[in-house]
Image 1 (cartoon, rainbow, N blue to C red):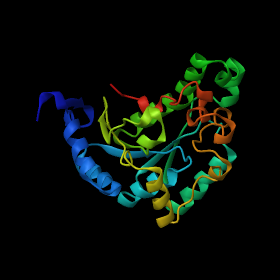
Image 2: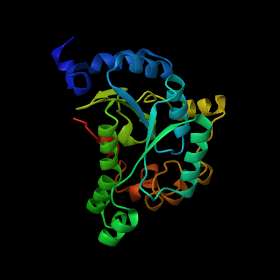
Image 3: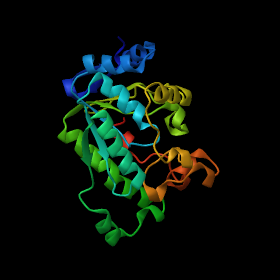
Length: 245
């Protein structure tokens, strides 16, 4: 394999063939087969992260079919919708999820006392809020769970910021795997129907991307999908940028 395709990947202290891995995963027609191959061939402890958002039941169900006891990491900011917390309980009971919850060391109330409502204070303050409440807790999860394979349900069809994501990326300390990267909205709908899985309860109210209450808007309240999160200031919170070179 060409040297340009190889990158250092710490879980095994070896070089990773990123291009070859992506080509192989792209050849599988079933996302479950991609998950299975990664579990069998990539090094290190696996996890699945989930926001328990609009269509999260698909990635949860699909990965759990291959490894039922896989740790599922939820980053709880303390500002999720009440419907989201109830949806988490519903899916945890139904799918018997091994849930691992991570949060900021500083409570939401204490943060507001110190800084005010940072999500209302512009791009820099919003980024600081996201770093403290999402990025740092996720880094803690990766460290404490000694993660070698991080599965996530990101798809190219979800937004402009995700339209070029690969099936697999080799980070500084782990593999990041997106088995649903090439799935369309129709693929998601068909999987939910086939397996009798629910959408998030706010989906029917026009919420197509669901995060914190204070930075999430329904599609009918904005001019574009990009504006449904973070007021259109940004699309990504930074959590899925961890370790990206």
